[in-house]
Each structure stands twice: as structure tokens, then as C-alpha cells.
Image 1 (cartoon, one colour):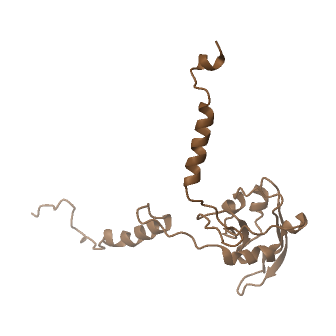
Image 2: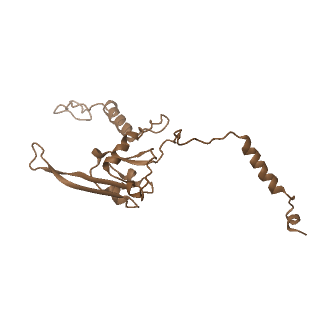
Image 3: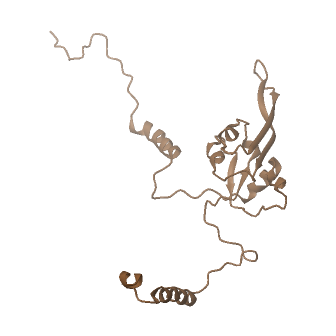
Length: 199
């Protein structure tokens, strides 16, 4: 007995199945997008390029320390700020260099997530290919230009649970109204709490 008869298959069955798939595909409408001429409709929260809001950066170096690819390079210097009424001048960090090497970046988004001051954002822009790999090192000015392409945050879901800020504000607003202020009436000096009998 041949292997085909042992498997119980009909000769040419695989060819018929393959042609059926081809015919089914030929009858469907094509969904090809003409990309260079027509911009694609990207899904929300697409990861394209990382944008920098420079005035929010405090040079805490958290993004550079947490980056698994070590592709973020930051330099800064300290500057004295005179505060009126203060005993001595304060110091603040001034950002000199903030570079991201997109030839090394794996787009994990850890830097955007760990930034405590909302200085880094995802932009959906993805058309920043270069002919030279050295041009994929974007400096702070180039990263700042991407901020205009960052979409606004999505609206809060009315069916979802309220944010912590909304809950705290509602609790603070309801607290004085729910608890009446305690009365400050002092008992008279000879009065007892149990309402003592008079003789």
C-alpha cells in the first residue's frame, strides 16, 4: 500500500485546497494603501518618535538610567537662582544636551513612562528615516520639534473609574458639608453630665 492510501487522502486534494484559497482571495476587494501618496490612518497611541518638552526637564537623569539600550545622552550644569527673601541663592540644573540615538532605541517606552515631570512624549510620526545612520542621533532641538505632532491625551471614559485627582477633590468638597462643625458651648460650672438632682 502506498502512503497516500494509508492516510486516506484523495490524490490532488492539496492542490484543490490551495486553488480554493486563491479563488476566494481573488474575489475580495484589495485593501492596499497607497502609502507615499496617501497617509496611513495610524491607531491611537502609536509609537513613532519620542518628543521632548524641554521646559519640563529637570535633568533628573531617570530616563537615561532606566533606558535598557543606553541610547539617551544628557549633559547639564548648575546655575544659581537668587530668590528674594531667601538666606542664600538656590541652585537649579540647566539642560545642555539631551540626545536620543534612534539607531539604538528599541521603542520600549520606558523613558516616557518613568519621566516624573512629563518631559517625554510619544509622537505618532514615523517618517524620519535617514541616509546616514549618524543622522538618527536627535538633539534636544530636533526632539522639541516633534512636540507639535504629539496628540492630546484621550478623554476620560465616562464609564470608567474617576481619576485620583477627581476623587480627592470630591472627597475634600464633601467633607465640610457632611460633618457639621462641632458646637463650642461650654457647660455651666456646677452642671453635671448626668443631670444631677436638686435638693
